[in-house]
Image (cartoon, rainbow, N blue to C red; front, side, top):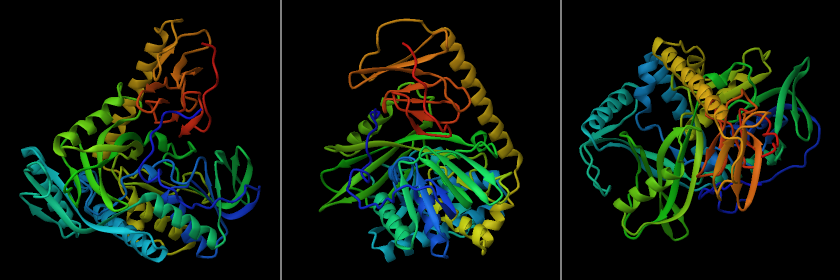
Length: 500
């Protein structure tokens, strides 16, 4: 069964993406994950003469990258001041240098591979007085980090007043799937292999390297890179250091003029705007309404809020596509990239881009290629040595305290749930109690399914996501189809069938 997941504008378009037949084989490097990080890392390694395989559990671009808004910007809302508040100044500068290098890599490859890119100004805007202070702070921090930002009092192209904005000229945007398709073809062209719909269940170590155990057989490699949203290994306990967030986006046709820039509000609720070419017209993309995975009771209200906001400010707007994406934040707001603890130098990881995956994924690929083959950039060395300051430690403690609270809340509610009742209405899900444990019952497209309501990762009780008709874990963000099939981890297997 496929859950009622909506499709992004990028994924709704046809793309020529190569896939190679699965065979059990040995490679120099294996990359788990077919998003931007995975394909860029694979291409950089393959161009250095390595024999590389990419293993993707679903389809190329089916998770974060293909559902992103695909902004390639060094101005990232109010992200830079968040980083500065939790890190020393050198880490902030290294982060900006990393993103600048990542941006340059993507732009160079897009030009080489014939991927269309639109150059746009990035704008972080405020609509409140508190927001005005935030954009002023972002401007100061951005300039401290070497960015040539401008502070302005008005943004005339927006159809509503602002109290201030910070602007960075000449950033970029593109079609995320067009880029991924071009990268996939480039990987195969230099001898790389790409296996789609092959799920990695576990990764082990042996004397000669890493062993990827998949649902189709085993793959061996000298080294393995985990380029999935959340690492599929618990080694390093990254799941406990990440906060999974779900956010929403929609594409609209709008009569008349639409703003040309890439805009992002610093006030809550967040609103992200950009254009997207669509034949002979321009569409408006609107995003926002982020929340921790599995912790919003009425997720359908998020898309409706985006629709209402867009119709208010852009009369006559017609929604053509609606979708959502999952991202992971870290306690210090800087991605985790590099070797995996206790991986004997054979296992590497990249995660925690905090909604800014286009530049951070490319920076991660440059870091990983340097770490694996030599030539690690100096900014990457600084980020590797990043000290953990008290503020970041406190945020990490808070994230894990919330996980414990949701664990308790879920089990308390499950133990009080009724044992029987009518089947849920179409598009609804509920938790029932049985002798073998909580049961998740839902009805999708006329079919009622009953599966275990307990996440196989660490035992959290799942919640029903009405907008996407999936079972989502409020602990670490694993998600499952209505029939129990795994959508995304850190879980590595689906939900067991249960008796209603």
